[in-house]
Length: 315
Image (cartoon, rainbow, N blue to C red; front, side):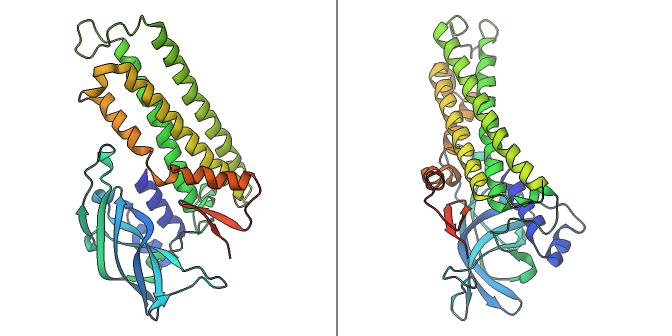
């Protein structure tokens, strides 16, 4: 999912020359972190990039790396024209130019390989960079009208719904384990409280899914008309993501309690529990996302746009 977001962003928003160089004769994997944790000094028609990034999901399998950095010119941050805000760009460069630093010893989501990575004094031509704020791709269909922040929200929503669904499926399979199987949950199938809780958990995930489909259906209607996605629709997308993640967490807590010692032992259920609880710590579903959404619903914002971290002012 993370590599899809970074690859789609490059495919949609890179200038034509950069797009042709990367995608013209191949279908690469691009991965990395867009947070502006690097420094890019203007040099001719390109940039001299140095930085150390964290949470580089998928970088170990990538052909190119995606990284965010603040732009400097003549030793000072370059401002976005007409504003006092510093310019931030996304840089795309070969994985072979990157130092992979590891540092992904975590409770869950180990398979994402979200390592630290770094580059030092790397020249990146201008055609291999793009702004992270674009909302309409230079190429691609209607789905590329949601911008990088939309790609991220949609990807994380799919994760939450899929993992919430999977953990209930896995728990249900244990009910039908053959007699004497070492992972059978003794008496589970005959427990009224378990059946009640399992039914409620099914409803939570299905309701979260319905909300997400409703909201993203509205967004699809907007983009199919060739119109930009308004702030309120993207606010609803962030709320739906937070709601789906909460539903995933709540059914995971139910699965943890219902499974007893089975969920503690090595196996699929234990891995799902670790992955799901770890996913609730992601920046995209931090408490600030709901606080910012509340500001929009209450009419307390004006001339702002969404980023993964919350609202920023528009020019």
